[in-house]
Length: 177
Image 1 (tube, rainbow, N blue to C red):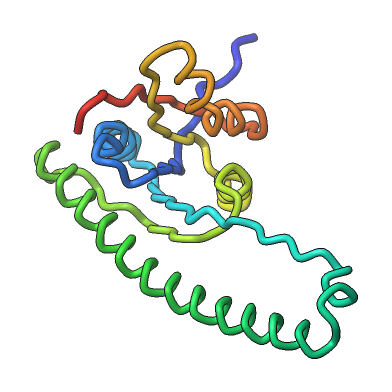
Image 2 (cartoon, rainbow, N blue to C red):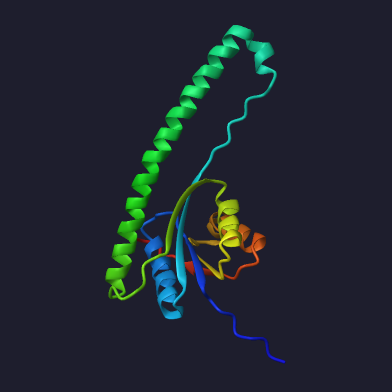
């Protein structure tokens, strides 16, 4: 007995906002239009973990440790304010990417349902977004210029492929914008 043809109702497009990303975005928009599928655009600002060992307090002393903690709190507060500003700029870039793609594709494509700008581990954010919003297809661009570069730069794509059960369409991005 033949299995039913899979339905594509929700597409997730992940982007690094590179100039070449528009090439893969055209595929996501085109598929969304062709299947009448909802489209989510996802950009992840990658967090860089900061490690502060517990024994710093003993090493620095009580007073100096309190000064360091206050400084770290102030820095974290400024970082969060900066991330809010970054989020606005990223949304503007996403809207520009959407307008450019619609221009290239004749403007008849349906707009995305959601634009998500978040921060965290890129791979985990992609996998969680796909799982929590019942995504049927993930569309990602990837850069591959040679065997060594492909082994290194394709790591996000490969990790997403390993960690998700959702089909992934990988679009090889052109070398120039």
